[in-house]
Image (cartoon, rainbow, N blue to C red; front, side, top):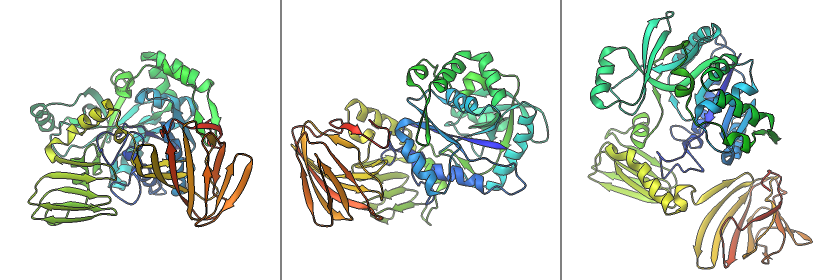
Length: 472
């Protein structure tokens, strides 16, 4: 059987402001009603009965994203084989090593969580062909049949034929300039580097141990000292910190003599920019992609644009090749040819310690979410939604008091030694420094309005005394 290893990392920069570092693109519904992560898992379920058997996925993700991964898998009725939490990113070679060490007898199908593959049958055929090569101890990479001389992708040069479906890898090459990319396409020997792989876990570890034993050692120590936390495997941070930061291409695939490439022509796209998302989205007769969330769009004499309105009305007049994205706290306008520079905007936000680089106004938590409605000097107003059966941590604040008003549902509130039930239109007051908690004992979402007041209102003014989600 094949074990899918879903690499769910990402910095959330290329599709800012819709994507953020704490809510990157794999958790967003970019091309369908499902998120990119859900799409990646679901397409494996569409394989025919004659295809290789597929196990439930093993997901590697950042610790900050653990509850989003678990919730999105639960929403599509998928129970992961495991969810391994990285305390910080160390690139793809260590991430895959963690999966291989935890499942040493498995055949690993390594998939980024944020790619589009529209032709499922072609993908299934490529996986079937790759399985035969992996069974012969080859390390298989999937090379995308190029449709243009792209400069935004790395390339794989194919060499001697190994079988009808696979060729030896002659070399991996970095992203080329335009002239070089055109030569690659003209030669017919080059494929785009997809970042997807299939090989035996044991075989990968053999080659990684040969070329980069430090990675294997650090990952082994990290797993040996790992803790099981709910549905997650939390690796040891101190051991993992010493792990080299290296991609699988640099660490193994460029060095091994057993790398082979299987071509994949399946309408693939890594959705690496707003222009790429425009390409894979349905366009109207004017070439526009108009996505209305809770907002509206009026496009007058505008062509080949991507416009996304999450909350407000956006009106365009006489625009061409323009990207406009509106979220609850930011608006980004760019020419389609300049979307790669979005990273520069995010870097400026990070330098200024701006929250827009990492968080949306709506922030998801394991118990639900909150939306920061308004704020000013010494006050902040939030709309808090608590899922049925969920509860916030038992906590206290040193610098703020809170007023809670129940808008919908039933709230179970602990304030000091007193516990009470509040229903719609009832309220309570949490004094500064008082131990308190909030829970939803009902079967429907609980919605409250929270008004904070005090000298400091930052999220780091939370002292968690007890937490069911392991956040103490």
